[in-house]
Image 1: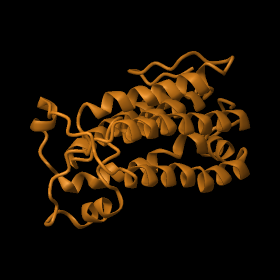
Image 2: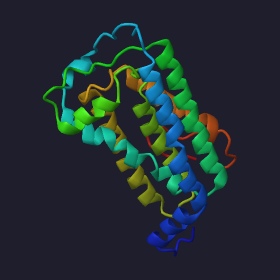
Image 3: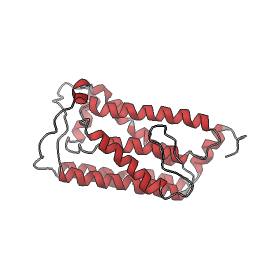
Image 4: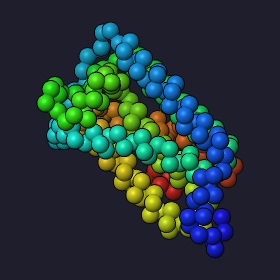
Length: 230
């Protein structure tokens, strides 16, 4: 990317590269992971019990309106792959997604613990719609946390060749703040226990390292705190 190139031109150029593959991925990749997710939670017959609540679970009150932030994950997810340049990076991204979803499904089958969801007869309408579709058994690890962390790590990796490092750093900081709000929302909406989040975050990081960073000769393992990827 030339330093003299306008930002909108540079972003449009990124967006257009491998556009056909990006469209195919956006249309097809959610199908197997969503189908698997819904199938696994509906296959639960005898949950294994409940996880004890931590201080974190108790200090954050039930706030069903945070479902807006919870669902905003689906806006965050496609940002990284949409602005990736190469076909190889897009395929790495897809492999990482499939990896941590399969890991999550195995855990859900082996340890089907229901989440801490309370009775919601008078809850916010959008929250009611969510719980009609999403049963409470896919709790540990949090795939919401895995997706959010993986999305920003991949966006950091995909933008590592930018000629505007300060802008990139600012946008990644905002993205990590967005991730933090999404993680908070998983507890505020009682979709997850606090213990579910570190496991999910680790899965997102592991997928990035195994399928993206480690397989790229021009990158190093992305830093978790700064958001600086190779």
